[in-house]
Amino acid sequence: MDALRQTVFSLAAVAASLSVVSGSAADGWRFGGRSDGEANAALFSNNALTTGSRAIDFHPILTISCKADRDPVWRQSVRVRDPVSGSDGVDVTVRIDNGGDRPERWSLGQKNRALVYDGDGGVARLAGARLMRITWRIGLFSGDGEAVFSLAGAADAIAALATKCGVTPPLR
Image 1 (tube, one colour):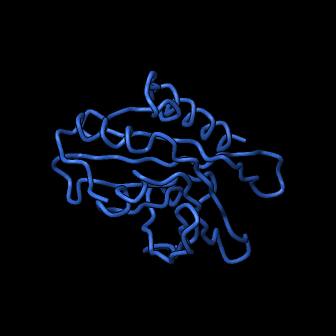
Image 2 (cartoon, one colour):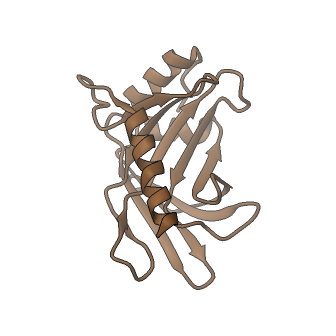
């Protein structure tokens, strides 16, 4: 129960630190930043994942971030509640809009509770998209995870991040 309580408090702290930008197409995105110069925008998934045999639903969170002195500057990640098995990366399948499934290898972050994809290309493809679907294997006996994100306002969110970081938006 302590681990669940700690997770709830951590998620509450993340939610409290994010602000919502209103009056633009990026209304569904929550913007935040860190003291080290990273700026980020987060979006909750359309679908909820149920964890284990418990009736706890969790919405994965897509985060786009930039940091001027990081190489690469741009990063996207999907935060999930349950840790994902693996040590050096996870094979995922990504579908943008009605395009075909694209296999990719994403790294693990945040104690194996985040799938991370670095680089301009991953973020650039979101700017003109309406929908992103990502699936991954949670663990050997745990099945697959899936997150679906409505990307309305992604181009505005990316432009706002680029301005905040003082960098060029990634090209599509």
